[in-house]
Image (cartoon, rainbow, N blue to C red; front, side, top):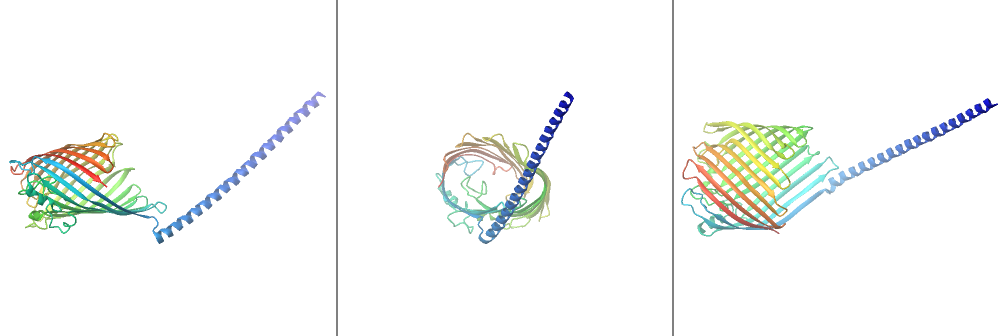
Length: 454
C-alpha cells in the first residue's frame, strides 16, 4: 500500500513540474512575440521618421533654391580713433649726425565689413562665406622739431599720393575674403585680396634713399583644394606688387607665382606635403629689364599639429632664379615656422628661414637672405598682456655687393580698459650693420598709443 502511495506522489510532482514548464514556455513565447511586434512597430516608426525627414530635406532644397533662406547677410560699421605719441632718437636712421624728435600720430576712420554666410549642414555640408572689409581712414603725423616732414607724412600712403586711390579720405585699405567649402571641407575654394600701405613717419623719414620708404603692397591669392580620404592636392595662384613713391618708382616690383601642392594626412590635423612653385618677377619702371627674372622652388615638409602643444610648418627645399641678364642664383631653402602653446596664458613663436630671393631695390638684384625670430606672448589676465620680441635677425647678401645684418628687439604691453578702449606701450631697439658706412644705423623708439572702437 505504501508503494502505491509513493508512486502516486511522484506522479503528482511530475505533473506539477510539467504544468509549470508549459506555463513558463507559454510566458516566454508570448513575451518574445510581443517583443518582435514592438520591434516591428519601432522599425515602422523609424521608416516613417526617415521618410518625413527626407520630405523635409526635399522641401528645404526647394526653399533654398527659391528664396535663399539660409543666406545670412553681415553688415558692420565700426568707427575707430587711434592717437599716439612716439619718441624716436634717430628719425633719419643714419649712422652719424642723428636727429631725434617727438612725433604725434592721429588716425581716424571707419571699418566697413560686408559679407554673408551660406551654411546648410543638411545638404552635404555646403558652406559659402564671402566677406569684404574696407578700412577708410586718414592718418595725420606731426613732428615737433622737424615740421618739414609733416606734409610728406600726411599724404595718403606715406608719400604715395600720386596713386589713384590716394585721395579717398586720406587712406583706403581694402581686405577682401572669399571662401567656399563643399562636402565636409573636402573641397575648398578661397580668394583673398589685401592692400597694405606703409605710412612713412610711423617708423622713419626717408632722406637720400636710406631708411624705410612709403610703399603700397598689393597681395592677391586664389587657391583650390580637394581631399580624397587621406590624400589631396591644392592649386594656388599668388600675386604681389610693391609700389614706391614717384621718386623711387624704378624699384616698383611685381611678382606672380603658381603653386602646386600634393599632401597626405597622417593625423586628423597633420599633413605631409610636397610643393612646386613657379613664378616671375619684374621691375616695370626700371631703366633696364636685366633684373627681371623667372624662378622656381621645390618644397617638402609637414604642416599642422606636430605635438599636443606645437603647431607649425617646417619645410626644406631647393630654389633657383634666372635673370634676363643671363645670370642665375640657386641654393637650398629652409623654412621653420612654429608656435608653442605652453598654456592658455603663455606661448612662443619661432621663425627660421634661409632662401635665395629678390632684392627690394632694382639696383641690388638678388639676395641670399637668412632670417631668425623668437617671440613670446603672456596674458597676465583678461585685460593685461605682454609681447616680447626676444630676437628678430635678418642677414642679407645682395648681388650688388651690399651685405647687411639687422637686429630688432622689442617689448609691447597692452591694457584693455574696456572692450572698446585699450592702451599700447611699445619699446624697441633696432640696429643695422653693413659694409657700406652710409647705410648702417642704430635706432630706439618708444611709443604710447590709445585705441578706441565705437
